Length: 129
Image (cartoon, rainbow, N blue to C red; front, side):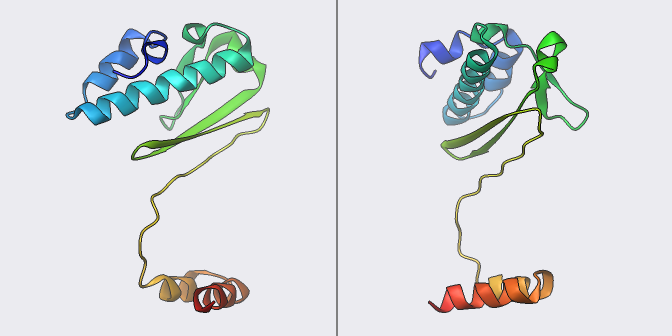
């Protein structure tokens, strides 16, 4: 398991979720990611990490529960392999995404179809340079 300070703040349910991963690497990432989120939230809320109360919203996104929800603290987490990205804001929703760079031989075709003309042109200039 990851560092003990990350695991010890998890709920029983969060530990069970981490244990459901088939490979040890997935179990480690799950526990570390949620544990670090709890440490960050605890710091912003001025509570111990294990006292950050989380629930899942209508779309399955974790959010603060109870009186902590009225704090105005909003957050989002994205994962990609061994990297996690955390974003925290006050009184505004936030969303982040994280992906591993990969070759896209059809990027110009996609841009031509879906981007505005100036965006498509900028992509072509950047690719050529």
